[in-house]
Length: 177
Image (cartoon, rainbow, N blue to C red; front, side, top):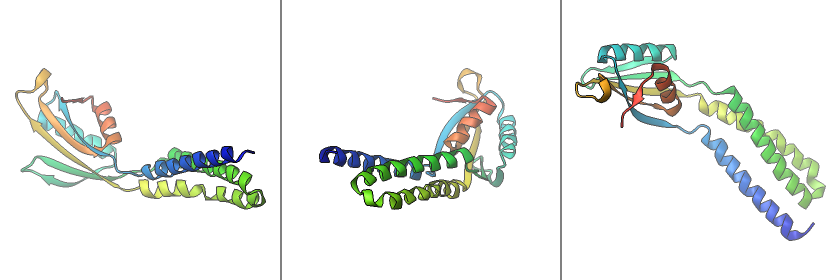
């Protein structure tokens, strides 16, 4: 095979491997966001509803700040079994692609390089260990009279972005502008 084709294929495969490495590393990245939501219910009713929601999701109250109207919840985020398998599969395919390109360049080491595919479960284990962590949710509910569209309270939540989406979906809370 032509040398320029082999070298460009190797370069592209190495670049894809670097991208795969950073994708696997980003799977455990903290994605905490803050969002303001509006509720059509009173402050007390909204707070009670939120406490029940977080209790169902296995969060526990760890602190209550009466002066700032802020409640802090903590729970353990469970890693996704599907994502662990998916990352392991991606790592196996990525390593296999790199091994195939290297085996063209170094045919005498083909079987030794194939053993590198056995390293793929490290990606799943890395995700599984890193994704299981304590997660904090900061919650503040303010009652205001002059809110738009009949809203009676504003909820300020700081949490993981997936938790925020589930909260909005479950309790039908709209974001404020």
